[in-house]
Image 1 (cartoon, one colour):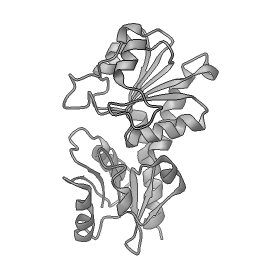
Image 2 (image 1 turned 180 degrees about the vertical axis):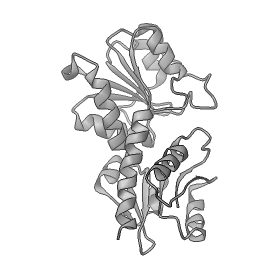
Image 3 (image 1 turned 120 degrees about the vertical axis):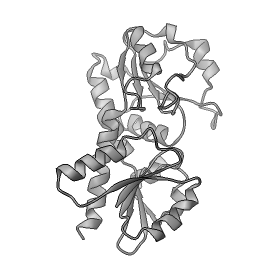
Image 4 (image 1 turned 90 degrees about the vertical axis):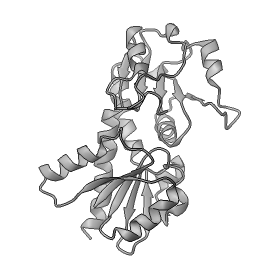
Length: 250
């Protein structure tokens, strides 16, 4: 058994994706949604489900899961967030971050749509676990970025009011890493200066359900290129499977 650990998972396509993948490849595995009220609940769940070999981690536990892990790979440690856990043969828990792989795939597609790749800078909306994976990829690509958060954690972060004051003019990539607008609250949207969008802007929303959020609809209405998080989902899922296979095949 494999699964997805989170607090509320009605929005997720992961179960459908892996169920289809297992069926197509004639694999006798299952994938379940594992909804828990607090992250510490994952430990008794693992003990009660001996056939659980690994799981993905989503909102709001990508950072909170780390203290419960026995090992964490270098990328996940640098990112500061884990979205994939492998249960080793001896019962220890190893953490990885495949969001990095997924977002890099998505980012490469988005950048290919631009004729001016060299002079990109980014505005990252949100500062949680998904945001940290985005930050890691942008650093790797030498793309400067600014983090926007409701509660500024460092002197380098800015608030949403500052974005509304200055507009999108200084930025070419605008990336939403928050859950605002995710199913079932599809009518919600971050309050941002959408009227300042220009055609050279590229808007990325890590949300994939709905396929087109209100955030992306507004960006598209002003002529910006838009990308949802579906490619990131597939990329991180494929990478997670490769990690889990290492234990299965031992």
